View 1 (cartoon, rainbow, N blue to C red):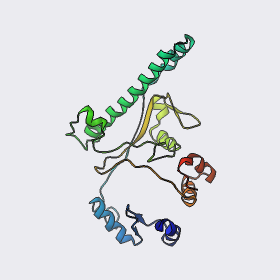
View 2: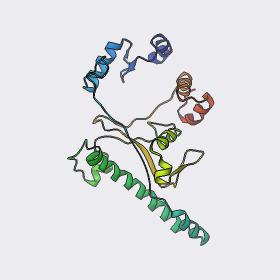
View 3: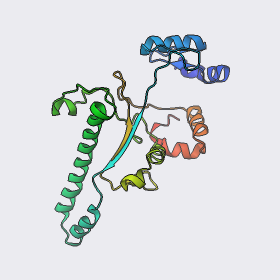
View 4: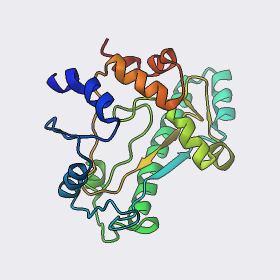
Length: 224
């Protein structure tokens, strides 16, 4: 609460050169910010451009197992075979999740290769005991569904996979998964809590959209 009350003043006073940690510690001095990051991440940093900085990456993906099932679903609907329709949809959804899990494992062990020696049981994989996370737009850590547009543009998803986005930002075919890859060993899932109007205004400005549009997509997170 104390941080929130002073946040606007701090931002106006120093711009965006600040960092906040989970204990609400706010650092304003640029040198101290770098030092604090260095301590927290155990990563050497330098104010000199290109000096002492480690390269890192964020991955992105989109996949589907639902291409072509609409014709079969239409046949089931025509025959009033609700059971088969439900089973086909469920199977496609489960296969999409399995595809996402398998692809993530290959990213960790082969393509990115930051966990080459990983050897986890199916139970460990279900429990997400592997290194890294794959958050997705529309979920608690990234609640804005419109960020799917960014991901789809970056990967040329429609061209490469056949997946499209509806006006409500749902993926079609519905048996589809998309998201980001983070590799850091301390990365973990979290949920965005309630946000204040000034935060939404700032977010809208950064995205180049109206406040009303931002509020529409961040509705469940609005704290006012």
